[in-house]
Length: 382
Ligand SMILES: [Zn+2]
Image (cartoon, rainbow, N blue to C red; front, top):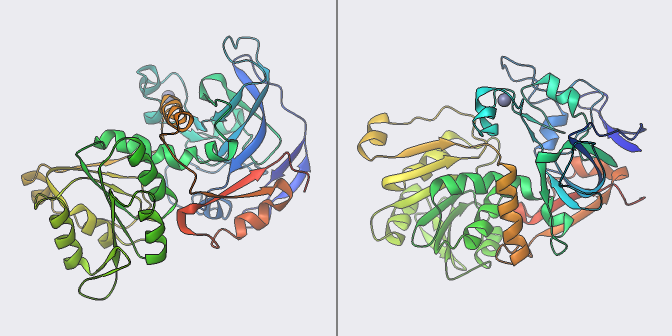
């Protein structure tokens, strides 16, 4: 098969011919039909995460096959696989765990100390060696319990977005997003934030507030559901409005959120800020929470937060970090996609063959915020 392999960090991948792997007894072999390309892949292949000072080596040995969100068709199953059959359409949840630690044995795979993303990076070199195939190749092995099955009416290119969707979804379940609950998405027009907005609508949320900087993109987000999405763009001025999007500074933003929550403050907030965003941009969203407010962070702020613990205590505020999602949560999202309650029709799929992997990764700055969905389809010849 053809696999795009990275031989040196910071250099282009090369298309190499390697053997099609054999699935182990509890694994399956999947022919990849579409694999999402996350904008963060640019930082992964330049060894950003390998250069952070962590107690573990986070990157796989090279050459390595990347590709975080693969979808495809099962072509072969291991001798012990009972339920999944060849021909089934699936999304492969790339979250790998050791399987036998205390967290894994208690049904909390995302808390496994060896948590590792297949086709990306992670905390266990052993797991990376067991599952060395990312989605940027033609065939990939995966454990049977990592498969989210896809009904025929769920498109591979939509399912290849499940990484971002699931990251938002697992956090939103912790926040209790739903009808009658005010929900603020900090950074709503990006890859994660837009997924949060689409999911909030599917989950029955009735008051979705969002922040951003690009007014044109925010107008597109508002168009998803003008009656329940209200947006604020941070600008220099004191406060105003631009085509249905409120604008202004931090003080104007605080007043805007109070006015939209009957003076109580926001019930829950999901931080979806992109890499490089300052701590202050997260704090101004955190401070919109009312008493008993809940916040979850799935964004990429890396600065230390100037957080007032006394404010946190007296206002009974919760702040939680969240990473990725379980395979069961993947099935829930696919059920919403199949039922049509989760509407992803506003995405623009940009589908490229494997031969263009380097150009796709290099060109991801050219996108319409979260609306552009980058996909590699290894079945396309060129
Ligand atoms: Zn474990």
